[in-house]
Amino acid sequence: MRLGPPWWFFDSINGLTRFRMETTETAGIYNTVGFNDDTRAFPSIPARHDLFRRVDANWIAGLVVRGIVGMEDAREMIRDTAYRLPKKAYKL
Image (cartoon, rainbow, N blue to C red; front, side, top):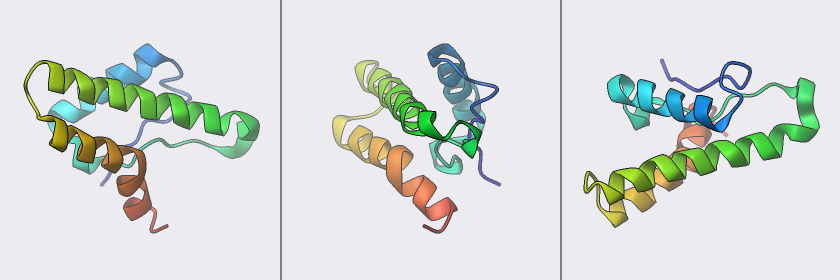
């Protein structure tokens, strides 16, 4: 099973940050699939996904600042959360 935050439950920067903090503690980053959305709000989908990518990048940057991961690992983690994990999970 892979986890992804449904927008309708985490529709804010703080909600998305809480999702990342709480799920990553137990599931890890590599058991997530990026951002899940629906097409009822089709025009806002790019903005929502951009916000989620920025929240993830900020969260990963915090790991770098605290010395938990290095810059090279952080770069790969950001690429994975923003692109590779969703692509793999949804076979795109």
